[in-house]
Length: 604
Image 1 (cartoon, one colour):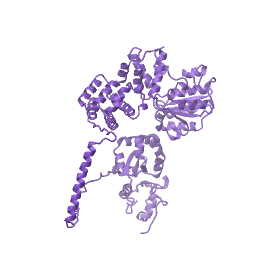
Image 2 (cartoon, one colour):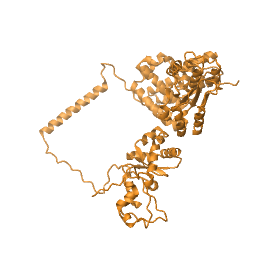
Image 3 (cartoon, one colour):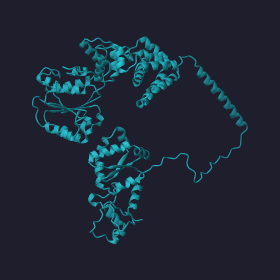
Image 4 (cartoon, rainbow, N blue to C red):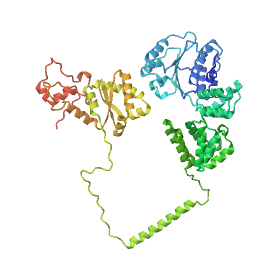
């Protein structure tokens, strides 16, 4: 058989084999023992934390006739078939490639049939957040009223993208990141079973580089084994992960603390010359300073062995910089790390970073009871200023000056511009009017009904921006969205990505292409009034005999017809024109355009 990766060979087959998920495994085992099995579960958490493995173990446990304490036996025919992926009653689906409505409808239809071999038919849908809105709606009814002996297990790394209607119908389990200690213990156990020589410091490097993912840790370990000929060495682990040795980090840290910028630059160049990654260097430096900061606060807060340093090293490091200096260094590292994400010259940013760190001034706290020279100098200056002020007050009391008339500010000229000018809000009327010319109340009602679904298809920052907006007019070709605040309107109008995402979402929901137009809410009444006036819907509108009456826009629920049937339509060619008196009467014209139930007549 061909070689298999470590994360496949050592995939957990029992709940007790899952690393770092004790709360989840205990809850699932108790549910199986007490026979309180739900019809749907949601496993959410970062990548490589055991979500899919837990789903397969759960499928074996509920179907195993020899289960003990909630754990599958892994020896019966059912358990072996599920482990090998050969049982037809346990179906694993990748939602990233099967995210359409037809695939979910097929699942819904087949779920009605009873299982053929097992007691329960289990559907494991991985990356469920990739399903489309239509697919979620097709799955919703099945989750609400599932057939007997059917269990759905949904796994996702992004639970915020799943509709709340789905989440409310499942039991949610959050898988947490794997700690470095748990990853270290698991890799040590695997290497002991394989009888492979290893350096524990190398395992700590791999565990920290995995960033909470057990699968990532085993993948890196597999890569190190291949690189070092079936042996795990510290230098090989550092080279494969792109990490920096602790001694180099210690040397760099002490040099910047002593304000030796030139020497620190040489150390940094030596680090990069060995092929180390710039981003990894910054991450290692942040982790290094974090360890120093925690040890400075309390030595019991960190595991010294996991850092690759000794107690003597930490005692030296904690004396090199104060906590305030360490905070400033972490801030500088974070800022440079953010700027380096989109650059092709990381060495330039790292050189600037080194100079900044070396120029941070130390602020040592004086010992208790010891006089501070800076404080004494400050007090002496304040005393001198107080004496000068007292002398000035005495002189003024002795020789009082006549009260000066308050100076009046010169009047502002009529054509004088204020010093600070607000940015002018610009509305593209050429995009607003085509929407209003075909707008109807029914289109606006339909858009408002779909507004929540459309927001769920956008990113979190885009949804937060649109929470202060609402659709105020809609037609078959577009919608008009009003913003409560002008500066948010301008921000949304300049965001072309937001417009594209909204138009794509509306097209997926309605099947029609619609143009989205933004307007500020305080200018919307004037825009609506100007449109009515420009298109002849006002008091002195065009006569019907001379020009067909145009369809009235739907500005909002207060100015639109009560139903689509009441929306004004242009007269047909053979239809007789309206009487002259009806056109000249503004009340009759308004009632005809907007509906008699909306028009209110007031006497001036």
